[in-house]
Amino acid sequence: MKQPITRYAPYLWLVYLGALVFQPAFDPDTTAADWAAVALMVAVFVPLYRASLRTRDQRRLGLLLAALAGLGLVGSLVNAGAGVFVVYAAAMAGRLEPTRRALLAIGGLVAVAGAGLVISPVPMPWRLLAVVPVLVFVLVIGAAGIVEAERERTQARLRRADEEIERLATIAERERIARDLHDLLGHTLSVVVLKSELAGRLVRSDPARAEQEVRDVEHTARTALAEVRSAVAGYRATGLGAELVNARRALSAAGVDLQAAIDVPVLPAEHEVALALALREAVTNVVRHADAHHATIRAEATSQQVWLEVSDDGRGTQGPDGSGLAGMRERAEALGGQVSRYTGAAGDERPGTTVRVVLPRALTTAVAPGPAAQS
Image (cartoon, rainbow, N blue to C red; front, side, top):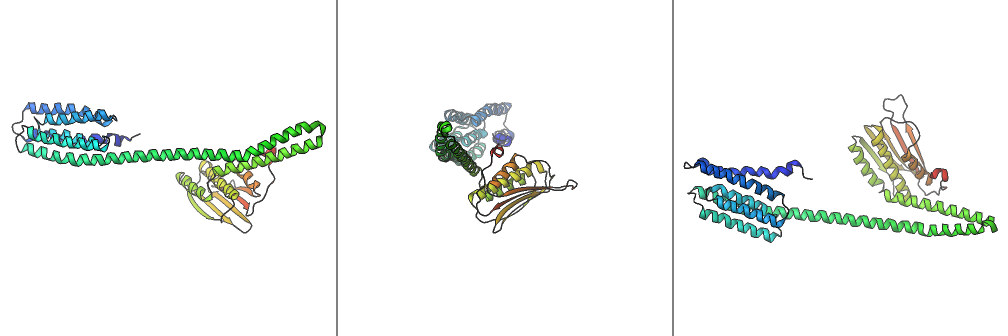
């Protein structure tokens, strides 16, 4: 939607209608009829000008430009300044498509301005002083209008191209996710179905074998769940560096001063995802709940572990972990790490909160969470 200043800017150019009063104001032979002619021409021009600004139809725009040019030609019979209407028409001609049509329109307007110079009964030097600048302005403003209109059309094409690229990228990403989930779950769920059917057939004839098949189904399902969680986390996380950029933007928008120091090597994908999502969640908590003025993000690695710490000087909160911290803790523990949260003493003016995530440098296979943790 256009801003009010941009929307009304074309009406500022109406100031050039002052050219119509130049001759009547300085010509000693001016009569009341001349002033009435000025008022009549303005009354006819304003609706035409407004309609030409609003229309998008090429045929209607062409008719409006012709009407403006005709008004300038007829008006020149009584007022040398009426050529200004032809200049307004030239300013609109750039919107005609294709560009060849706009150039032809500008040529026609130059011819109209020249005809006004020939047929106008206004005595010299008024006629020359008014019409010659019109010829120059028609060419200059017409050319500028064509360039500006072409620039706007190019920008519109670029916007449409960007939108199409974004749409195609979204479709491609959806297809990739669908393929990944199919690859992850297709075989696994087929195995679950087959083993469940086998366990059902063996439950009476061979209970021990049926029990083993059920355990296999449970193990397969838990493995699939862990794989899906890892895949979904990978879709949502963009890496530690990208999350730090997002954190700076979010904290800056919230008016929180940030000091960051991250010095970690290239990490396994699972660690990168876990730390990136932990950083996102911790920063989100600072922005939404901490009411902080300063925040610190630090990340370092030793030979045995890598850790991330986010602290703030806000109003630390007590109580159990929310769903975000719980998810952060679950991801860390799945990699053999841990999450700790420290809140300053209750008597402090700004106790603040510190969230620390510690992961081992080497991948650790953790026991899949039980049903209680999954819920």
